[in-house]
Image 1 (tube, helix red, strand yellow):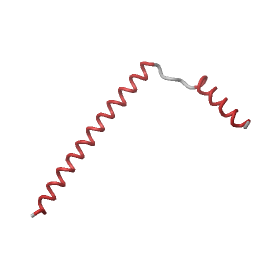
Image 2: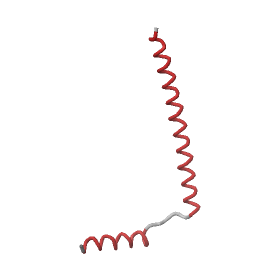
Image 3: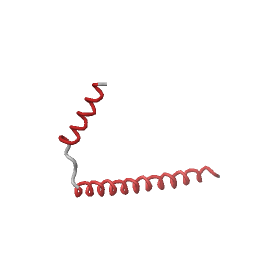
Image 4: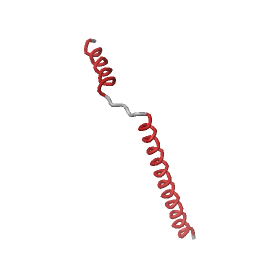
Length: 65
């Protein structure tokens, strides 16, 4: 039990004294970058899905007869 309490005490000390937390402006900027990247990746995946869907429809129509 002593090791567990020492672990929590050391973890708290590290979080309070050694971790450099971002400022509010840095946090907002990082959030906007993540949102922008998410939108771009979502658009790329949507375009790839649309292209694959149309390609497969075309290939299936060739064999439909």
